[in-house]
Amino acid sequence: MWSKVNIVFRLKTPLHIGYLPFKGSVISPTRYYVPGRNLWGAVTKRITEWMYKIPNSGNYIEIGSQVIENFRFSYFYLYDGKTIYFPHFTEEGLKYGSTDRDKNKKTKSEFEYRFIRSRISTAIDPNSLTAKDESLHEIEFINNKFKDEEGEVRDLKIIGCVWFKDKGKIGDNEITKNKSGITIGNFNVFEELILGGESKYGFGHVVLDGVDEVEFPVELEEENENIKVHIKKDSPLLGHLKHDKNIKFRGDIELLSGRGYFDPYDKSKSADDKSIDKPGKVLSLAKYHFVPGTVMCESLSAFLRWDGTMELKTNETN
Image (tube, rainbow, N blue to C red; front, side, top):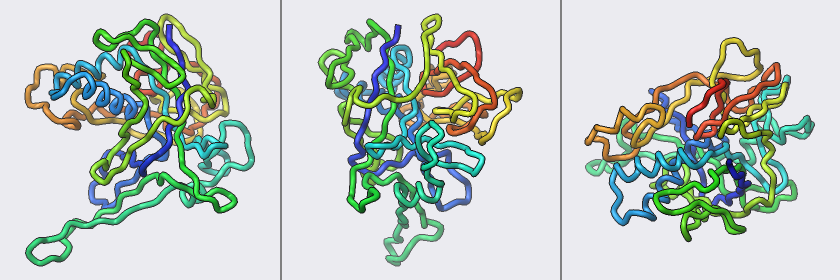
């Protein structure tokens, strides 16, 4: 059995959720949402560094595997205190707003104007005190502040949900829920996290803002110890769905991958490799997925994976 917890984080600093690098580009774009894999990585890091004073790569792999066994993460989306900004490929193009047929959804440019910013940096040659060749770099990010309709500056938040396995444990520490969040032992796992990239610039610091105060709109049920998500016809996907050539859709497809100490889909890549001593050394095999916001032309059911992605199949493991 799984227990669902709705979680809201407040962005304490800007947030950069990167794609794989674009060769030849000086721009590092950000996703406009937080994939479940980023939550898994942040939670793994936080728990590991709580349990071990000087953690090594093996500790991160061990705890990361236990988190996969005992947790499931939705994608997290921008939340201004009133509206959750889901992407939605409408007949008028990509828009952002609630999952219903709300006519007040924002266009992509309106959404970016309110929430997205960028920063330009360059490396300096110490000899000439001028910019190094080919070092100009622009980082796109989700700003932690925005102006509402009245021009008031507000804190931006993100919202999603987390499931944990009943009677699950990390090490010898039981996973429980209280009004303050999800704990292992007496440690509040989600009290604060560092999400995404560019943390050297101070990006990615989020703090817990609410537990089960706002409902994250996902329809699901349990089936054979798995979480099955119901995808409605003409409704936007709330996470990546593994591509199936037989499905008719309106939206987009992308290759999805990720970096870490190990590939959770193929642990043999790092299990015996002693050279894997830093995060990001292992690149997961890229696979095609329908992107969030894509609309299915028929109702479907899919199993939720550990990282918030979904897959249409009858037997699911992790």
